[in-house]
Image (cartoon, rainbow, N blue to C red; front, top):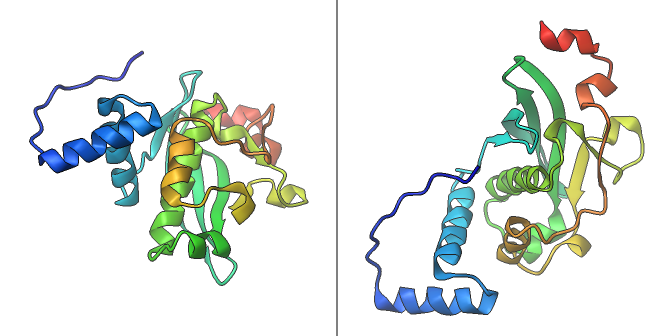
Length: 197
């Protein structure tokens, strides 16, 4: 089902319109699509990333997050994937960014950017048709680290904007992600019968 849209009239300086039009043409996008992308990037970088996702199978997931690790090696957030229909936490992921990326991207607010990248990644996986409670990463060995993902410099382009472009156009490839047959909470011992009470 298509998202609801609203027509608005926006007054912007001619210089901005020309710049946006040129950027849109260089990216092969319509002017409208480019303005929406710029707005989405701004909203995410301002802390307004989507915290609810509906999967391709119609399941609603609510995403809670809190700071997890902030040291010289990485800045990582914990993302809790809840399924409101059953009032259950279905998965817990640790998603972060390595320090070299943060330095190369000249990030000043590591915590905010790391949180928004985590939310953008979850949105990316969801758009790819993956159930958010069934994600598994094989970046680190061991079953306790199958929910841990830390982006490293070799996996991303030179700028944050380029990376967000790849995610939003579903062109990035995560070589470490898989989808399990079962949700993380079931894999880690919750009986399936507990989902419905």
